[in-house]
Image (cartoon, rainbow, N blue to C red; front, side, top):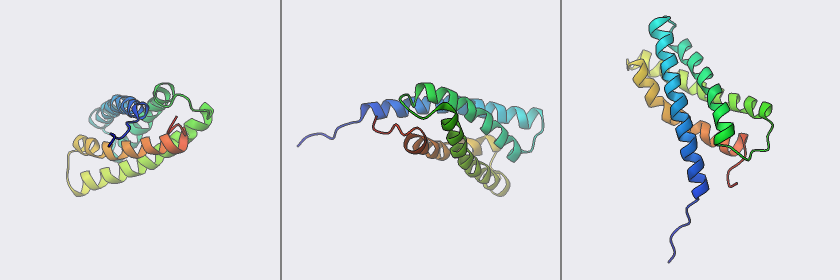
Amino acid sequence: MSLPRIDVHGMKRFVSYASVGVSTFLFDLFLLFVLIDFFHVQHILATGMAFLIAVSFNFLISRKVVFKGTERPPGKSYVAFILIAGMGLVFVTGLMYVAVDILGIYYLLSRILIAGVVGMWNYLLNLYVNFKVAGK
């Protein structure tokens, strides 16, 4: 009986994506905190603003580091990346509404809890649909 083969390249890609994601998520949290606590922006609007700024940085880093080997032109991949992120944003803002306004969970804790689900969603869609580098 042989051991299952581990896709080392795929694991490295995921670890790279997670590292980039955690970094840009921390930036997202920082922006969220500043927008809400210093500029008094409403939490749903601030969540969307912080998310879109951070995800744009995530794209720039991910294209160079995580999804190397994509043949899709940068403009097209950015549009697809933003569309995928936009779907994620709908999930993030909707879940933030539920967590903060309905369940009364602190906004930063809510955002952290929501990040894992949306991050995995974005990774899988970018891997298979946008950059099409799964298995490469």
